[in-house]
Length: 261
Image 1: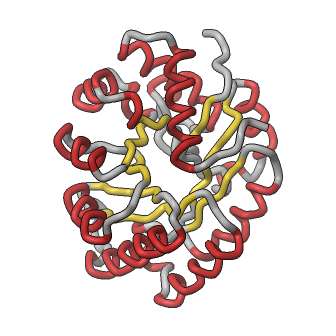
Image 2: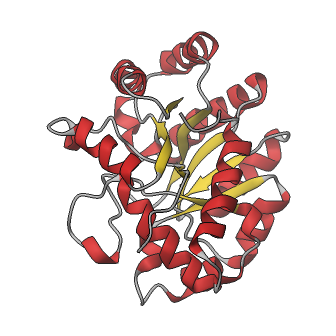
């Protein structure tokens, strides 16, 4: 499988503790595989300083700051105010990871909505794209985006319907898709990858989570984007280099990324 040039991983948690022992080697493997740019979204306020440090440690790493719905117990009302200060000072490429999760039991839906709405408003205020988590909550996410208006971004790890996808495209949102669509039984998601307009597709690993079908049960890492791109290109019946170019251009345009370093 030939190395693909200038891939962009639109969603990778490179600051996660799973990468603490060998983060430098992980970054080097990614670059060797053609992954020259990575967007690294935050999950909690406490994680922002480390994320900033990780992204400053090597070229091609771009931070996004936000409050992830799955970590609701770690969030405080004052964190939204702190997030505004971080965005103003650090000038990230996006607001996120934020969103709604109605899959995990015990996550208060009202509190999730308060934090999500606050981050939607910040994205609109600063003119930044959003990185959105929507698990069993795509309709509610769409309604929230519509209510605020004037937003753009990506729904990461998209697993909704084709109709929900079309609604998101009309709202200026792209779909981030990665390892789950490489599994043969993921029929609906694979059909979407094969047929959706390429201008709305972003490639992602969500590393260290969501390993692709070739490394099932193992730690994921951004170098695997090479395999994901090749798999998706085969589904679409196009050359992998062409899909790499299209999806990288999509990421660069959405996040206003500079040219590869």
